[in-house]
Length: 406
Ligand code: C5P
Image (tube, rainbow, N blue to C red; front, side, top):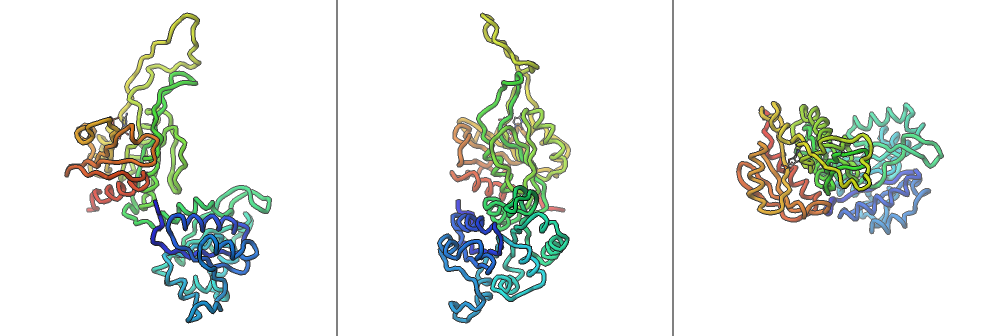
């Protein structure tokens, strides 16, 4: 999937040790299909060479406002007019101060000042020592830059090159990429709250064993990410999975179906959309032994009795918020065959406006999938694609089906 296909990004580097991460970021942009024009300040050149950035971007680096390569000698105008976004990574404390004051005595700050403000977004990835980051001047500058329309991508926390530990590290390249890709997506869910369940549940029988399934959580995590990209505030209630939390998504980890229900209900009570992707265990061991069930000599296997789990989707879909049309519920059906008929029947049984069918064995753990959307109008197949891409299509469809505000 090329998340930045057709996009042209101007990547500005200012002076900071995090310049080494800008090399990786540049590569990630190119890998996602963007064209990247690198612009460097003199201070940035103390940390990384033009050669490196040219090799990674495939384009000669710009560094001077007096560059004779441009026939009109105006690189600050030409570079900013062609950009879909200007990303400054790393953005030093000094460069933030320069932007606040509208300084224009080097190519990068001159170009930022010259950018068409309503057409070319300016995204800043600050990088500095924790005291510099916390300093009142920096915080004041950041607030002013936000008020002036710049997007501050935030900072990471942890061990810093200076040997201190705290806030102010530049975000990792993969985090910046995810945030920038999200920023550039359409926002049909702006202002909406979305709750997603994902992954399997784990139903304990004793402190070390339990009943679970092979759901990887990939589809649900992709939906949470796509909903965040679409501008929603997203809560992801996740069973035990090994997936990275999508940026900007609030994650609640649970184990059992009952815990998933308990975590979901208060969130769904304030949400506009609920997407139940989790592969919830239908049954749990009727009783949980407090100590490990031992193998008795010659005793044979223990008898297991099961109790039925709550149906999270049905509980939420039957709640007052969903029935009054304020919460749009989406169910999933993992079938082994006869997808259309099974999904139609499940949509009616669960009482949801939209049900997404897929073939269970073909999706668990995979990076791609095929979906069948079933709503009151009929069915719509979404052909095989990455879960990321399917999630975006599904989120766009949900946004289209949401009741418009009265
Ligand atoms: O009934 P079945 O498990 O096939 O239904 C699948 C749909 O119902 C999925 O959306 C799943 O997340 C949801 N579900 C649930 N709670 C359960 C069982 C299923 O929310 N106990």
